[in-house]
Amino acid sequence: MNNLVKVENSKIEQTTILTLNRPEKRNAISIELINQLKVIIEKLHQDDETKLVIITGEGSAFCAGGDLNDFHGEIDQEKAHELLSQMQEVLWQITTLPMPTIAWMNGLARGGGMELASACDFRYVHESGNYGFTQGKLGISTGWGGGTLLYERIHSQEAYYWLVSADIRSAQVLKSIGFAQATFSTHQLELEHDLIKPFISRSLTQLKHWKSQWLQNQDLQKLKTKMDAEVEACSHMWVSDEHKEAVSNFFKRNKK
Ligand SMILES: CC[C@@H](C(=O)O)C(=O)SCCNC(=O)CCNC(=O)[C@H](O)C(C)(C)COP(=O)(O)OP(=O)(O)OC[C@H]1O[C@@H](n2cnc3c(N)ncnc32)[C@H](O)[C@@H]1OP(=O)(O)O
Image (cartoon, protein in one colour):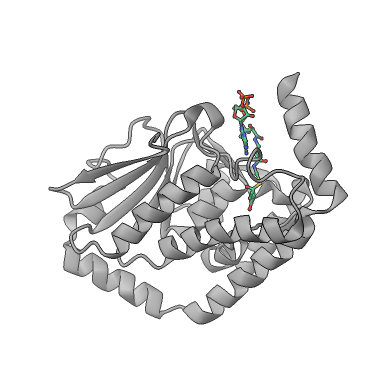
């Protein structure tokens, strides 16, 4: 079995780094990758020693969103709902992990890649990357619950506008709207990085306490209900002609 997600446990720093490992596909999230991620995140829920989880991508991209070969345009509404729900569950499990999570966005992200980042507690973005909730241009809405999470991360007026405009933004803009906590310029993720150091210097007890406080501060039941509604809405848009055409145009563009 290919490791579509690399897992590195750093015992001294009590940190787990998860690296999406399909660089040739810009780390697009296939069904197989979802299945692997599911098992890894489930294990982390039972892990009493890890105090920090970092999600990043191999190569030039953080994540290009759902793999459009698996999440293709010809599936019906029920099937779309079933597939979208699988990744929604992963996003939910990441959101509710008992330790802090960081999306270390080493490069570009699109669509579901932005949703994945939104499921993390903190986001750091590479200064040369570009980032977009581009679902609007594909004739759909966010389909994994990440639109709901976006509203939790930035000002609601800005979230609403970003989803409608579906525009691609720079790292500096992400920082200015509060989606990213900071930008970085290094290519290799190092746990000694100034942005990671504060986490590593805190104890397991401290970090788990702050995470639990963070989760208590949210109405998780309401959040889950809103994420469910988002998946349902997207599954209906999935079968629109506009969406089918957008997916087909993507593959045609890539064949040129
Ligand atoms: C399904 C859930 C839904 C959601 O809930 O949000 C989504 O995520 S929908 C998907 C949203 N994502 C996109 O629309 C991104 C599509 N990709 C691109 O726009 C570009 O590929 C890129 C991400 C901007 C990268 O551009 P570039 O660096 O120029 O690389 P290429 O375009 O040449 O891509 C390299 C390689 O990767 C394949 N690829 C990229 N993204 C996807 C994808 N989302 N699904 C499947 N495959 C993808 C691309 O086809 C190329 O493959 P080869 O042709 O085999 O080299």
